[in-house]
Length: 142
Image: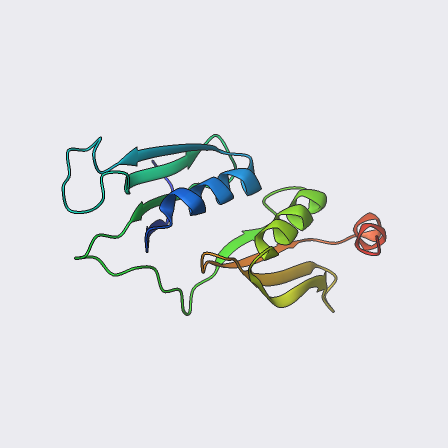
């Protein structure tokens, strides 16, 4: 790994979260249980280490054990600005919004670009946007 990669400690939801993010971003999901790692500090089927590969977003996650705090996201956003086509970014925004909370609609800004914010169902805060042009404005009206 040569890039910054968030590692999430989740409250027993790592399998669900990584499966969700894998579906949203079209990535392959890899899951390894505590039992596979020979660990006995939680349920055998809990996720000791999981990750996404082959997609545009890289995330690691595990189920927190009793000794570890779980994810609490405040004062942090994961930014996906211009990382894909406008239609893909719109689709990601919509998918991340399902079961989550839109903080600020994905919309055209006074400077001509589009962006918006969403906190997804697993608690991650995303900033998604792209540079706008006439074609993007027409797409946004759809």
